[in-house]
Amino acid sequence: MANTQAMCTSFKTELLTATHNFGTAPIRAVTTADTFKAALYLASATVNATTTAYSATNEVSGTGYTAGGVTVTSWNAPAATGTTAFTTPTASFTYTTVTLSTAFDAVLIYNSTQSNKAVSVHTFGSQTITAGSFILTMPTNDATTGLLRIA
Amino acid sequence: MIVTTTKGDMDDSLLEHRSGEVDNENEFTTWTEYWLDGELVHRSVHVTLKKPSVTCEAIAASF
Image 1 (spheres, each protein chain N blue to C red):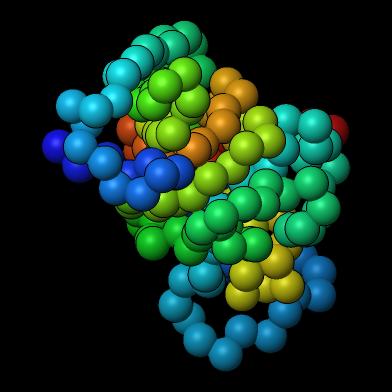
Image 2: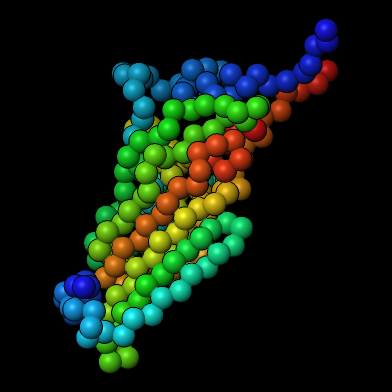
């Protein structure tokens, strides 16, 4: 037998359910999942790893689009394969019948339950929409391609 | 087929249809456009994310 230095995989999964608290955490009234939202950002915006919360600055705007974006319906239960924990929304993000004339290329996922704190930014090829729909379909929910992965 | 356009709902037989796709490491994207007399009146896009490169790496410190 030998001991191996590691970050425990169970801990990684539990990070995704707010099981551990090393500092001062928000008071949680319920044990159910928080509400997350997905907002689109202009190609000229600067949303990245330093983004701490949702902001309407440089968010897309146009007919049919509500500031703040759409609600993420639900997430797959956090799980782990090998030493990677992961989770992915269960459904696509759909912005129906919108006109977004200025090019956009990023979506910010944020926690609307916890003061709109930022979760992740995902980029794609620059797009515009004209009286149409923008659908963002999620990758396969696994340790290799899941939307949020802690390796 | 009825298409939502900037001019209201229109039958697609009255419109010029264009479409395309982008397939790379990050995404598979398809787009559909309808044009009327040289004017873009509808554009929809479907992006499928393939492998978001935002993995968070957890590292246990060594002593």
